[in-house]
Length: 259
Image 1 (cartoon, one colour):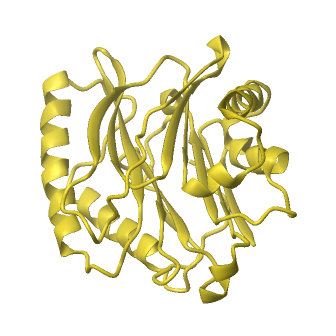
Image 2 (cartoon, rainbow, N blue to C red):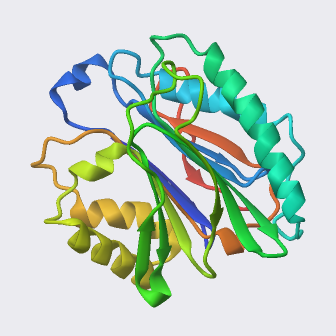
């Protein structure tokens, strides 16, 4: 089972169901949020006993974002605005964390992208073991920006990381759930070289599919995986907001969307 979305030149997304033994509990526990009106992108991975938790949390987080004005990617914002935005969004988002029942556990990794006078910045919100990579493919550099931890939504009132990120010129971002770690590669260097190679040879919207085509294997016993790839510098103003999930409560929206 898999669902893909592509925005030419801007972003791509892919969900793929895993094959772990406990998957008889559900169909797909990973979910993706793509909110172009706030330039916010996130992944979440549910516990197998509560597979709908990821989609539910992303939907609730999207409602928190609606309390803030939309951000025009073509506008340059002051750094003090970024600081106030980070403070206000953190306060609202952590209030949401305290409202999540204990049993509705999931990871959460999301980034809000905003242009400032000092370059493109990101505000990272992270808890759990999903991953965010910054891929400066033209200079063959990749950096993992998240730190693995065991604080899950539904069990914590604070994010493990809330950080301002400097986004390198022409860099791509890849956000993925921990199913990425089950894919076939010998070591981190091989994995990183493969990602850089794919980023150099394929359009950003193709990367989630290409990553799975190159390092996924039907013979492996693997977890669900959700992947978002995006090019921060090419963001355009849009009202599109999508929660892509395998849960019946939040049916997946498929196809190509023109911005």
